[in-house]
Every structure is written in C-alpha cells, then in structure tokens.
Image 1: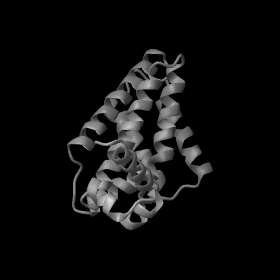
Image 2: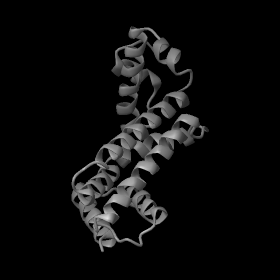
Image 3: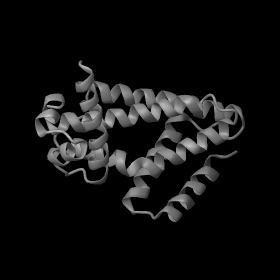
Length: 180
C-alpha cells in the first residue's frame, strides 16, 4: 500500500472513531469530512459502513490489549490492574457505541475484531493474575467472573447514564468487591 493511501486510511479510521464513538448512526460522509478526504477514499478502504465500524472496533480493542500488555510490566500490579479496569469502563461508551452500531448494521464481528477481542481478554487475564499474585485482588476471583464484572460495570454505567462522579463511585465499589 502506498504511503499516501496508508495515511488516508489512518485518517479515516481516526475520524471514524471520533464520529461513531459519539454518534453511531452518523454517515460515512461525516467521517470523510472530518478526515479531510472524499467519500470515494472512505469506500476504497472500507466498501461498506459495517466494514468501517468493524475496523474501528478492531483498532479500539487492539489499543486496549496493547495498553494492558504494557501495564503488565508495571512495578505495582494492583494499581495497573485497577487503572486498566477504570480505563475500560471510562472509555466504554465510545467502544460499545461502535460495537452496537456494528450489530445494528446486521453484521457481526469478523475475524480481525474477534482476534483483537481475544488478545484483550488474554492481556486482561495477565493483569489479573499479576494483581492476584501481588495480593491486590482476591486470589479466588476467577477470570470469567472478573471479566463479567468489567463488562457489566461498563454496560451498567452506560445504561443508567452515570455522570463521572457516580461512575467513579461505582468503580470504587467494584474495587472494594475485588480486593482481598
């Protein structure tokens, strides 16, 4: 892929993340306008809106997995775990808006989004394991339960439209539930 085509693709993805993260029903024209490219450029890289939505979801999941892997090397595994948990919940509205728009479009996550999701779960499991070994999370808390708590906290905060102060109180409650 030529350098200018790579740059255009990256600009379209960045714009789409902003546009669809705040308005999942927005048009691809709105994405093109924000990216500073023509609509033809958007469709050259992403033939349908659902392709663009899946690419945005994949990028978000890959970014979270990368951040979790980086945090796995932190000197304080407990803080790394709780900071990441908080980040996921705080950023959930944009990510879930894109995921919900993908489902609404009649599509399901394709192989790249599924692989990114699996990488995220694997990286989160490593954070959990390290936090448990450091005594910051209950040793008997299984990955499935903790991951469900993360997803539920994210979805719950969105469902009742928590303001930041109430979201932080919810996160503090989740932290207390996980601590030994």
